Amino acid sequence: PPSNGNVTMVLRLTAIVAALISPNSAHAFQNTAITSFIPRSIKAALPTTTMSGRRAFFASSTSPLSMMSSATTNDEEGANIQRIGIIGGGAAGLATARSFLRANNLPPNNHQLDKEGTMKQTNVQFEVTVFETRNSTGGIWKYDEDEAEKSTTTKSRPMYRNLRTNLPKELMAFREFPWGVGDGAEASYVTHKQVQKYLEDYANEFHLLENIRFGCRVNHLKVLQNTKDDKHPNEKKEEGDESSDCDSWPQISLEWTDNENNQCHQQTFDNICICNGHYDLPSSPPLRGLNNFSGRVIHAIEYDDPNDFAGQTVLCVGARASGVDIAREIGLVAERVYLSDSSCDAMQEFGNVVLMPRTQLIDENGEVHFSPSVPSDSGDGNGRSNEQTVNDVDVIIFCSGYDYAFPFINAESNLEL
Image (cartoon, rainbow, N blue to C red):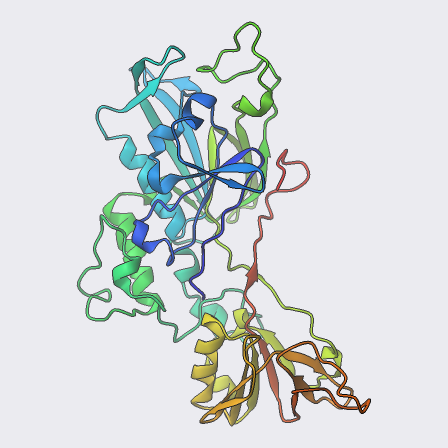
């Protein structure tokens, strides 16, 4: 899958993008959005950037401890307990869980400024729960061979059989956990199985598995509304304080289903980290006249084995990371592969792989039309300028990426996206 995971989701008032993995690996693993409602004393201390008129806080320069000002419960030793829910047990979810759990063992726990500006030590402990819908860690890197081999089942995971990373492992590794011998140390561009093994080893090394609820699908996230006077414990409303409810600190409710027994559960958290990635909902651009095409049409999420296309002519629509890699693989066995790139100006041949301009339409005769810009009339009323057509395509694969999907957030979640 493509490695461009650099998107920040701004949730209601503020969000934290958690590149809690090594700063070097921010391009390799999906970024994480953390729903957190941060009091003014913390906001003033954090680096910010403005996005759509809202503030976004970047956790690559912020420890989990600096995110919290207080907690909802106290244990016997007086420690403040923050309940952290993490949606997703892939690379981002594991790294986020590790960061919070590691903070539990960092002395002296946490220092904060009180309202007079005096540094005060607090004792914050994080109770971390990771919700993973599958029965193993790894997220997108977990290749489901059984699903791929079932001819009656539409493949619903983007990982394919022969995928190697398009970034070297030296950039992808977590800073505190070097890539070890036997899981890809001999090569820079590693297989999905080697990445999966690396993530499993990471989870085992730092004892993360005991914090993961496997086989649990999160159904609903809801921010519990506070009243205007219901401030967070460390931000008591002073007389004459005209601050809005933007400074309130609401808790967040999660509802999830245990896939094994189909039972529903609910729990309230102080903070929720959304680490579900963005390779789940295929995006297929509208293609005029697609109903005129009589061949097979799939999305790249369904692709697995190049041998399925042996001897055929295939059109890959989209020439970024996945499109180029799939076209390369299929080109080894196919009759011909057309790789349609919206930035291409003219046809270019590379053996049996042909780079084509943007796919514009499929006419009533089933011919596919390509041109570098929106088709325009050439003057004779029939042709179009700077255009090529082909009529031998057997299969169209949309290599057009994925849309962001947060199915657990809806109109009742009290969030404005």
